[in-house]
Image 1: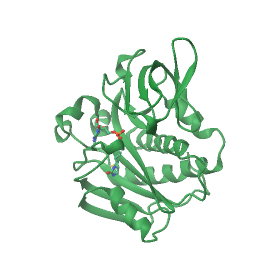
Image 2: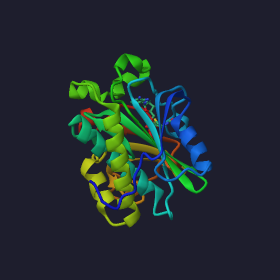
Image 3: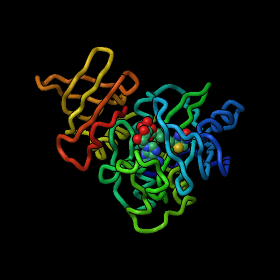
Image 4: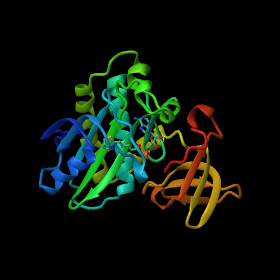
Length: 263
Ligand code: BT5
């Protein structure tokens, strides 16, 4: 989706060979007053991170980048995180020519394997959106434990992915979906729901209120996962509240990832 009023992202564009995490450098730049639309991209990260302190493997060949946003108001970070997943999917689809899907809350997957991950982090008066895409990442370059659940666009598309083209598409899609998010309305949820592969899978979630088990039934507009319990009532699961969350494939084994914790 492209909108003429969307801000320009990728100005300035900071390219780095190797660093710890692009989210850290983007945060420093945001603190130093660089404008919305600033993008940091690295060839390789030595301390790439996921959510809840997890590791994000970032060898050469991937697109590892962070974008600085300066939202005027809190129009819902949960929904913004879903919007960023949609933006990443659209860039992946456009550049690799493959239809990608979303596993709640914002894993970008193809055939049940993760091709991209997203990490939103708050900064004073800014938000840093870190996006990692396995563009041309051979399986051998990833830690062994990550290989079964991961995939690279290069292998799926059968050709090398141009990282500059991917970054340009991603920057445009992030800008566009950011504007859609800021405007409110149902477009973000509609687009997210159309790509949701978590729906129908079995969820076991351990939150402060105890353990719940049921079937995923989409997401609420604030990003919470809806879980339908055997008795028919629906519980909301919020990623940040969880001690443990397990997703297993009740509906389609290609979409699950066994007993791996996530959320
Ligand atoms: C994420 O966390 O998926 C967010 C990843 C964000 C990475 C970007 S890269 C640019 C920016 N700078 C950073 O330091 N981070 C951001 P989470 O949902 O917690 O997923 C982490 C899990 O994904 C790990 O525990 C592994 O199971 C798996 N994983 C790690 N590296 C992977 C990779 N390269 N490809 C596929 N799966 C991976």
